[in-house]
Each structure stands twice: as C-alpha cells, then as structure tokens.
Image (cartoon, rainbow, N blue to C red; front, side, top):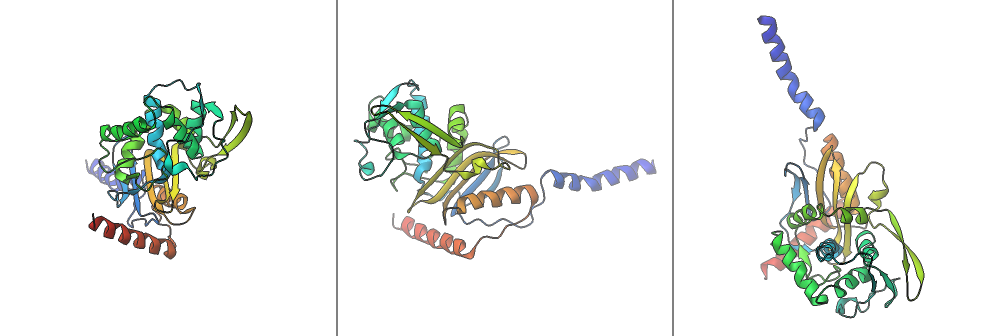
Length: 301
C-alpha cells in the first residue's frame, strides 16, 4: 500500500513537467512592436495572446479578405474573364499598377492577385463586376461584417487604401474564422507566386506573395493577408500553426517593413518555447506614439 501511495505521489509530481513539455511555461509576457495584436486557438477559442485587441484603426489591405468573401458569396463564375476597371473607385485614380486598365483576366486570377500580392486594381475590378455594381459591393462588405458580429469594422472601398476602412484585432479574428470556411481563399492567399495571362492586349505578368513567411520551412501558413498604408502601418493576419495548435494570428500597425513578420516570429517562439525575444526600442517608441495619437483622436469623437 505504501509503495502504491508513493507511486501516485511521484506521478502527481511529474504532471507539471509533462504539461510544460506540451506547452512551455511562460512566466514573462512577450512584448510586440505592433500597436494591436491577438492570437487565438481556433479549436478551443482560447485567447493565447492579446494586446489592445479592441483598438479600432485602419487596416489597409487586410480589407481584401472581406473583398474575397463578398466575391465568393456572390457565386459568380470564377473562370469568367472580366475587364480591369477602376472607374468607380475614386481613391484608385492615381495608383500605379502593372495591370493595364481595360485588359482582361479571369475572376479567379483577380481574386488571387488581390489576396497574395495585394493588387489594388484587381480588388477594385472585382467590386466593379459585382451584381449591382461597385456601391452594391461596398454595401455587401458592411452587411457581411454585421453578419459576423464585427462591430468595430467599417468599409468604404474594396482595396484598403482608404483610412476609413477600419477594424480591430478582435474583429479580424472573426473575419479569419469565417475565411477559414472558404478553402479557395487559403489556397490563393498562401501561394508563393503566380503567373497570370491577360488578354486585350495579350501579356503575361509574374506576381509574388507579400508575406515572405510562406517561403519559410518552419512555418505552416494556411491563409494570409498583409497590409500597409502610412495610416495603418504594417499589418498581418494569418491562419497558421504554432505549438501544434491551429491559430488565428493578427498584428496591426507595426513599425518598419519587416516588423509585423518579426512579431509573428516572436509570438511563435514564445508560445513554443516560453522564451521572450527583445523588441527594438525604436519600435516600442513608435508603438507608444501611435497609441497616444489614436487615444487622442478617439477622445475627440
């Protein structure tokens, strides 16, 4: 009996060690350079990390995930050729692109370019060829946001160029959960590159993914979208795997063109090993400055 009792006590003492091997203990919280962040376990709903998840701010080309949802919900033929048209998108009038106005590509190709390489003319073209036209598309974007309970979100155009396209990390997790139901979005957004043939005139262009992590062997990325404007900073959302968990990852308004990717690496390392990675002071200063500015702006509304 004493031997059995001793064995039980020994097993109980070992349990925390086994648990730590599954998910390392994280006594210290990882800092990020991004102004807002959220990491959620997709299976359990557990919030693994959050930092200002409710902060409402411009989201740049993360907008194009909603553009993709609305396009696919319309169940339009993906192999239909559509003409590149940005005539109804005032914000697009001075935007430079390699895609020629009036040339034709398949709707599926336009969707791919909007997602993987963040092509603004492709996104605007999808909206132009929506049933009811461009304004009906914008209305559908906001209706979809309301359907998903994205109460912090508002859309005024399909590209993300406008600072009036706003959301929060909390809302974007909801958007990622919905996008997960559309396998084509994951397939197109996570492709490393794509070659597209246009007609009228006939020409071919190569495009590359704006998220360089899709090329890294230590990442399993199922869906991704990047974004950047001066107002939004560098943004990144992903459906990926960390610590053997399927997760929704969001960071918004990061300093520097690689900081959002570095933040992804910091969170992955922290979740998998418990080790904290340093953040450059310059990036933290930027974060504090932007948060102060956003709080001041919110107070005036």
